Image 1 (cartoon, rainbow, N blue to C red):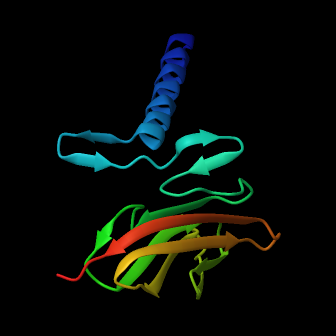
Image 2: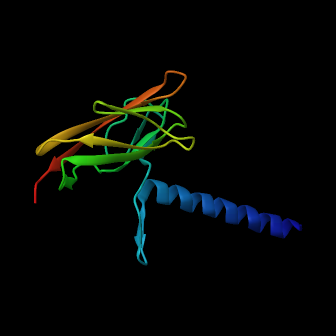
Length: 139
């Protein structure tokens, strides 16, 4: 491969990495595509999504429900991503992330405002926690 091609490939890779970083931190909405930001306000000591992570030792992201959501049912499925095979706790319900770190845990909620506490811990004892607020309204 010529030096010119190598340079173009490097520029292309750097551009793609920059685009990926932008989408992960800012999100994207356009042309019928909506991508929610995954790493909002990312710093070495905190990774926040819709709640507050109290440790940066283990990643923890909740994709559903979102902080501030209004739900039409007292039953909710909390879905997210953390470290592979981590133990995950949502309020009083225990579960486990799969080998990709994906989890889905059903919880019961009360009518009105609810706090959903999510925590995850890995095999090395690292822990992350976040708290979401959702409101349940009967329709």
